[in-house]
Length: 258
Image (cartoon, rainbow, N blue to C red; front, side, top):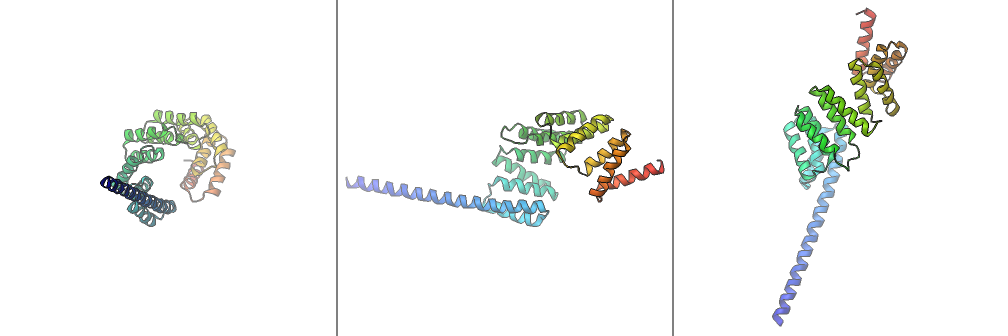
């Protein structure tokens, strides 16, 4: 009887020790996750600011304290892509998605990386995986990216199909509206290009690309007053842009009669 009691007491003691050890491990794991999250957020902020050296330092620190922190892997992948280290970028993109396969944003980012590597079929698969995630709030983003990727092939009918799909989901999605305007302009369908640009400016501020397209669209439609209006906005709002330089060259060519 005494032996039994001793065994029970020993069993209880071992159980309590196991619980204590388990709780301690959980606390350590939670602490590491919090630290990794903090380092990652700092790394992302430095990345946005273009301070790649500090960003790399913080993201590496995040992975030192928690090597399985998916967001750190995804963020450092973007950083490596920006600095041209494609091998390390791919390694971390794949690691991030292995840790969090339901991360639609991660699939979209990896799809963009693959597209710039001219791996179009793989990129398409990543974009469609992202778009098909029912919990992803903006499936229009990867669908439009799939269209942009199709333009690189180039496969313009496929690109148009993706842009139209995006607008079926959200008729006010500005990037898809702009791409459709550009597509119609390049086709010579200037009235359609104008219509898409009008829809674009209802939901977004003009940028150098959209203003330059508007200048040429209105000129093609023989509305030089409106074309000139957009030209003034481009020169005044974005004087140092590539499009402002193109505008100047275009105007000089017109004046010289070329």
